[in-house]
Amino acid sequence: MSPDSRTTSPFGPLARDAFRRAGMVASLALVLAAGVASPATAAARAVTGQAVTADPSGGDKCKTDHHPRAGDGTSASGGKECKGPTGPTGPQGATGATGPTGPMGATGPQGVTGAPGPCSDIDAYHPQGNVEYRSVLTNGRYYAGIRDLTGSVENPMLWTDLTEHEGYPAGGAAGLPCGAAVSEHPTSSDVQFDVLTTTGRVYEISCEFDPNGDDPAILDCGTTTGNDWVEMNLRPAEDAVNGGTDITP
Image 1 (cartoon, helix red, strand yellow):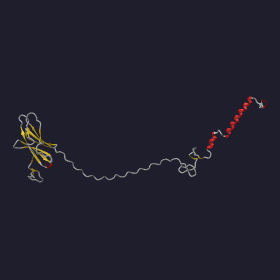
Image 2 (cartoon, one colour; image 1 turned 120 degrees about the vertical axis):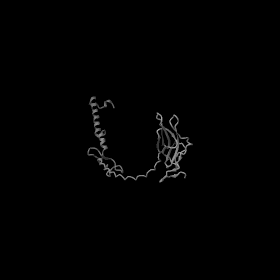
Image 3 (cartoon, helix red, strand yellow; image 1 turned 90 degrees about the vertical axis):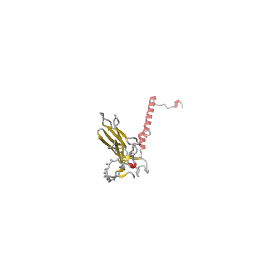
Image 4 (cartoon, rainbow, N blue to C red; image 1 turned 135 degrees about the vertical axis):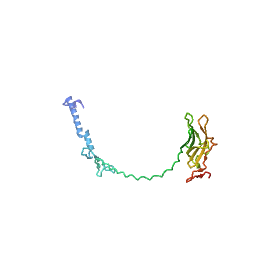
């Protein structure tokens, strides 16, 4: 096309530019009117066809957009089964009364009596003003004592252990030592010591008084094998009168 045949615009450059801007504004208005770029229009379309149950307080408590299926918590009509608010907790039930105390059980049988402990005993003999004697049984052992009362100084009691002398009762048929006695033989210088056992038997042994020169008097009880304990020839017997049980059987 030649320049001579072109249609000449009756408007100048400024007028043409104004027309172009006006066309762009009209096109934008048309698009907005069609709802293509409207977020509100898109949201309205998305919720079209949904069933909504409105909460009186303004909230949506129960709603569904699917058909009821077994076990999904919907009703047969397709709507949610709404549950009301949980009620207050009820008062606690009364506690049951405690039953009466049962009767006391029967008393159990008495236990076996324990073995008796060792006996303890003491005896004293004071025949004259110049000497005194003691016999002591403690913890199963027998002691003979003497104290010289002469002189200006008080002398101590001197002890001799007679437990190891032969014949001393140490259990079995003889019984255990349980009583002690002391006496002086009237016709000699012998001092007699006696022991009573748990089986009612009586054993005796003698020691000789020894003045011991210038030193305090002592007892001479011999050796453990040369001076024995001997059981008296009659044992005490129940209902006896001037008698007893012979020791020979």
